[in-house]
Amino acid sequence: MSEKVVLDGNHLTIDEVVAVARFDAPVEIAPEAVEAVNKSREIVETIQKSGEPAYGINTGFGSLQKVSVSDEETVQLQENLIRTHSSGFGEPFPRDVVRAIMLVRVNSLLKGFSGIRLSTVKALLDLINHKVHPHIPEKGSLGASGDLAPLSHMVLPMLGLGRAYYDGELMSGKEALDKAGLTPIQLASKEGLALINGTTVLTAVGALATYDAIALAKLSDVAGALSIEAHGGLTDAFVPEIHEIRAQPGQMATAKNMRALLEGSGNTTHSEPGHVQDAYTLRCIPQIHGASKDGIEYVRQKVEIEINSVTDNPIILPDGRVISGGNFHGEPMAQPFDFLGIAAAEIGNVSERRIERLVNNQLSGLPSFLVKNPGLNSGYMITQYAAAALASENKVLAHPASVDSIPSCENQEDFVSMGTIAARHAAEIVNNAKRIVATEIMAACQAIDLKGVEDKLGKGGRIAYDYVREHAEFIENDKDIEIYDEINKVSALVDDHSLVEKVLKDIELDLA
Image (tube, rainbow, N blue to C red; front, side, top):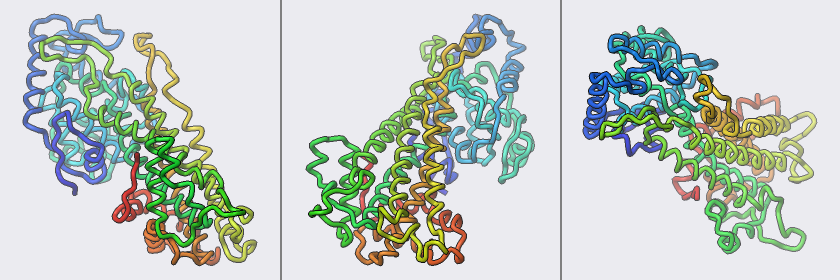
C-alpha cells in the first residue's frame, strides 16, 4: 500500500491519483479543508431558511429551474435527482478508474465552493478507504452539464441504492455498505448537484490515461533504440546541434534520450558512402516522438489544473452569492484529451511501421518474419497484422469527440463537450499503443538475437533487452510457442511500467 494521500482541494497530483486508484493508498482530509466545507454549507442552510429561490437548493434542475421545491420535499428531490440521472449504459469502468473518480470528486468538494455537508464528503471518502466501488457504466455522459449519468451511479451506493463491488464481487449498494460496515446517507439541499455536476469522470479517466501516456512516450524511445540496434542504424540524426536549431522541446528531449540509450553501442554507425541516412521511422524518431511528447506534456498540465478545480454548479461564493455558471462544462478538457489520443496514436503508428521494417526481409535483411526456416514457420508474421489492426483502430478513435455537440435538456444545455468520450477514446488509444510498442520491443529483441549482436548493445538497449529476456525467450520454432502468450509476457512489462522503470534506474529519459 502506498503512503496516505491528504486532500485539501488544491494540491492533488497525478501521481497521487494513481497511488489511490491503483495501489489503494489511504486518503485523509486536511484540517483546513474542513473549515472551508463547513463555511460553504452554512451559506446554503442560511439561504434555505430564508425561503429565497436559489437554483439547485430549493428549485428544480436544468430547464425546471423555475419550479420551487419546499423544505419538506428537499430530501426526496435530491434522491430523485440521483435515481433519474443514473441512466448510464455499457461496461462498467474498471476499478482504478472508479477509485480515481471518487478521489477527484472528494478533492473538488473540499475546496469549499459546493455547499455540501462535511458528513456527505466523508461518506464518499469512506467508499474509497473501505474499498466499496460503485458500478459505474462507462457510457452516457455528454461532458456537460458535467458527467451527470456516471456520477449518479457513483452516488447510488451512498444512498443504499444501485450496485457496487466489494472484495471484487458485484452486489447491491446496500449489501456492499453492510459488508464494509458503512451506513446509507440521506442527501440534503444542494448535495445532489454538488456530487454529480462536474467534469470528474472525464478528468479521472483522462488523468490515468495521461499517466500511462507519459510512460509510453518514454518507452517508445526504448523501442525505437532497440529497432535502430537491430538495423545497424545511424546515430548522426541524433546529434544535439541539429535539434537545438529547431528548439522544439519534445524533439530535443527525444534526441537526448536516443543518445543516452544508444551510448556505447557497437551496432550503430555513422553516415558513410552507401548509407547516409535511415528511413523516417528511425531517423525522425526525435521529430515524431517529440511531437507526441509535447502534446502529452500539454495535457498533463491541464489535468493537474482540473483535478484541483471546482466544476459543479451552482457555485457558493464565500460572500454568500450563489452563482449559476458553467464550470461543469467539459470543453477545457475535451480538446486536450482529443489531443492526447492523437499523440498516443502517432506513437503507435510509427511503432507499427518499425515492426514492419523488422519482419520484412527486403527491409531488414533478416529471415522473413524473424524466424529460422520461414515457410515451415510463420514467426512474427501476424504480430505485424495485429499491430496494424490496432493502429488502424486508433486512427478511427482519434477522430476528435470535442467537435461534436447534441443539444439536451429542452435546449437549455444547447452546446456540450463530449469530453468523456474524448477521455475514454484517449485511454483506449493509449492501451492499444502500449500493445503495439510491446510488440516492437519483442520483435526487435528477436532480430537482435537472429543477428547475434546482443553483446554489442548500447547502454539502454542492453538494460531493456536483458529484462525482456528474463520474461520472454527467443522464439526458435512455431511449434514451441503460442505467440499471444509470448506477446502477453512483454505487454505485462509495459502495462505495469516495470520495463520503463528498469531503464530509468540507470538512464534519465526526458519527456520534454
